[in-house]
Image (tube, rainbow, N blue to C red; front, side):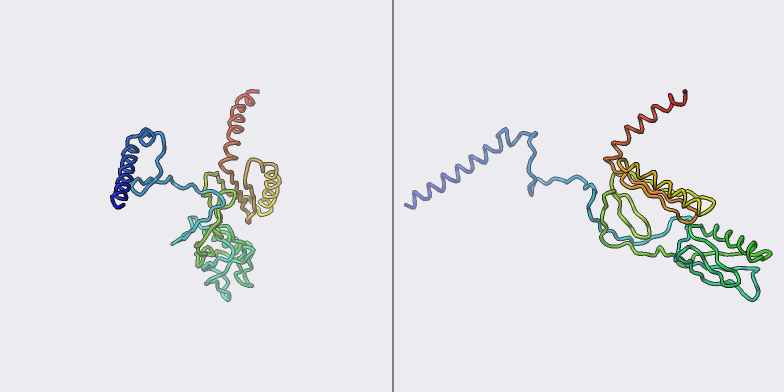
Length: 255
């Protein structure tokens, strides 16, 4: 009985060795056209991951510095010093920008709109207000940023929305996919003109929803802020139309 069992084990091992040897020389195993399954001794490198909605990204910004030139925003704090002002009402200290974008210099001076201006533009606006409204002869103003409202931390999970962007709170949105993002500003003479232009732009963009994922125009003081996002899929549909339109332009000009 023991001899029979030993012979069966030996026969089984021999059959296993023959099978393994045959597998090393068979055409199926050696065929380079058949993809090999990754194994411990045959590792493969995965391709770079492509971000797409609705992925969730873990973002941790170590240091955030506003891009120059810095534009004043509501709730900022400005260090303002006025030389040549009213003797009994000196202006020298930190002033907060109100939510509506104005800064109050006190009852003797009134308020001045400074939101969405650079620090130098705010200085010019303050000096103009002091000359024309307060009737000061030669006021000189120094403006510096004391504290920015853009001190918000960027940390934690952020959802990639359907238009391919990630919201960073006060810092706006960032495109992290293959979509096209256009973000621009246009300066008008008056806030009323910017508000009218934003209303007209939003009315026109409602007709273009089949070509864009996001189109928004907002008035920020005298600035018109326009933001347009087009996904890669819609951009591929839009490019042939733009090329055809560009090809027609020379003929249209000749007529």
